[in-house]
Image 1 (cartoon, rainbow, N blue to C red):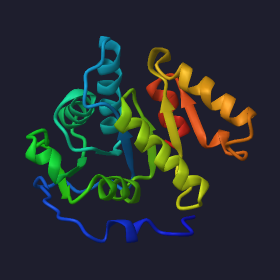
Image 2: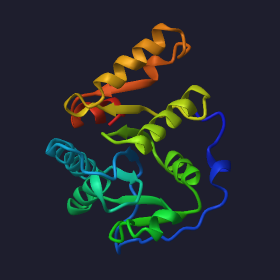
Image 3: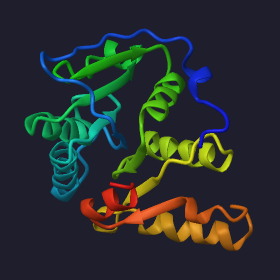
Image 4: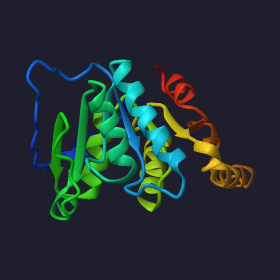
Length: 203
């Protein structure tokens, strides 16, 4: 169910797409939000690569932020290396900074960060969140807000790599106890492994 479509949020966009010969987009795709940084520990990259491989193995498309750096690059490259279909959505400002990934199945260049999120939200069948910083947090909370507003009912799964999100989950429990989440605490699903995350995402 999607009582109010996200399409009106992406009316203005510029698209550059690459369709490899003989490859068509999968029926189902997962949007992955994650860092443009590598992080302090190798485990973050390892799990990002595992997620990319597993999406490809299961025939699921990857939708992500379109960059070739950090965990974003890791998940995309792992999916591509294993025959996966990867869709990147990136705003002009980041293309101008030369961080866009030129080797993926589709690269959509859009006007704004807002348009980027809306397009990813429209194309995805579920959301998985890896470790990240401010941008990742903002993406996470926006898709959760959309869910509470009935803009979508797609699973939102936090992949809590090696306890990275433990403190965030504790804080959300406080928010819930203080009556700030209005019964929506369970909108955010939490997984500790890639297999569990994809199971919670409906795959």
